[in-house]
Image (cartoon, rainbow, N blue to C red; front, top):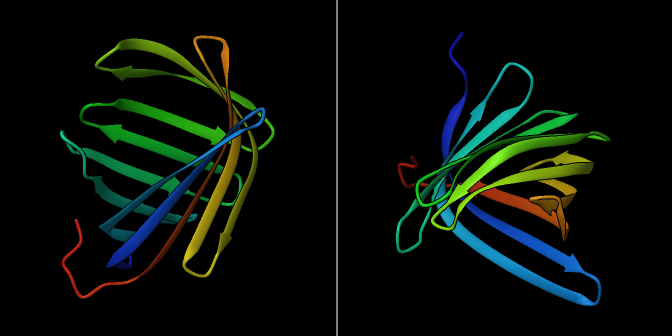
Amino acid sequence: MKATRYPVQLRQVTTIRDGAMKEEVIIEAIGTLFETKDGYALKFIQADEQPIETVIKWSEDQVALIRKGLVVMHHVFVIGKQTRSLYDSQFGQMWMSAVTDSIEMGDARMAFAYQLEMDEQPVGDYTIEITWKRSDENGI
């Protein structure tokens, strides 16, 4: 059986809270949504001066975030657990640590929230929400 796969127009909103500071980063892109055996995967290119290929895979209890390009990382977020990985950027390598608070899945929507530390320093509370709709374009 071949996995369902189709192009989507997606919107990713990352909300960062650090004390009284709140910032939102919005990415809009064309990507491809895949059905996996236990969830879904979304692949897209984050447009930047140097594009970053991004893959997000999710199921009910975990999310994997994989980025290749200017930033290289592969982090798995698991509800209620602290997870660690290396984050590689033009500024060098850092340890990334996250405690995942929630993962939500719905029709054409997924979101996850976590507390982030970089090199053992608190960075803030992050929420990433992705919504999508089917697209007539080819996707990735």
